[in-house]
Amino acid sequence: MTRAASAKKAASAKKAASTRQTASAKETASVKGTASAKKAASAEKAASAKKAASKTSAAQKASKKASKGAAVKKAPAAKKVAVAPKKATARLKGTAPAKAVVHPPGDESPTALVRRARRINRELAEVFPYAHPELDFENPFQLVVATVLSAQTTDLRVNQTTPALFATYPTPEDLAAANPEEVEEILRPCGFFRAKTKSVIGLSKALVEDFGGEVPGRLEDLVKLPGVGRKTAFVVLGNAFGRPGITVDTHFQRLVRRWRWTGETDPDKIEAAIGALFPKSDWTDLSHHVIWHGRRICHARKPACGACPIAPLCPAYGEGETDPEKAKKLLKYEKGGFPGQRLKPPQAYLDAGGKPAPPLGAG
Image: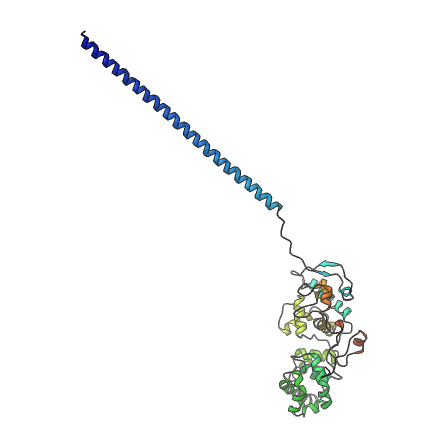
């Protein structure tokens, strides 16, 4: 072999060795790069997992903290339940009675309703044993006229007006022949005096022409008189003739619905519904008890619940003032030291501490 060929061969071998070394270095670098990338990816994944775990742990801690806070947080106060005294007569005397929760009779059976209604009437009879019709009258004629005049005004105003009327026209014959203008002047304080003048003169004429100047004692005859409806007729029948009747006036209507004795609003339907709850012999006195209670204690806008004798039996307890002292100030007439409706009340009323009403114009 020549020296040139030997040198060429050596250079070729050196080049090949260099190529192999370069390839090996590249392969090593590639392997290292791959390993490094894998390691980096692994580290990133681990960091991500750690971060996620940290978030989960923080969320769990926050959840536990919130749960603990909710448990520790004070529960809202329960709604205060109105309570009523067990025996109200004690409250009227100024003694603070024990209290009992009132349960509204939402699903009260008919039998339970009858028992509760009759018990209320018995309780009211104890509180108002002297209850009476609050219109002054001396005979059936005066009562029917006074009852007609009581529409849209108070019994007190009627009682203050009728003395002059009956002094001038004492009989149906006298009133039937009266000058309407003169009667209007007398009745002016009662309100609606023109319409009322027409009614009392008309019913007086009907009494003279159809009943011989006498007030009839039958419902069907009374309601034929001008200005006389069922309410007026029952007032006359019950208090002038002793024949039982239910007087459905505004107080009566309001209270029987407040006590949930009936949901009716028509007076005739109310009369029928309440009549079914009581024996007929109780109807007249029942009317007095309910009306008296409505005027004196169970007022329309602000009932004196804290001084009510039937509070434990009333589903509407709490609609009015429940504080005993404040409720006592809401009482009217004899319970509050005020005069009653009549100028000439029965002796039993005076014996119970009632006061007669003042005459018209007496301040």
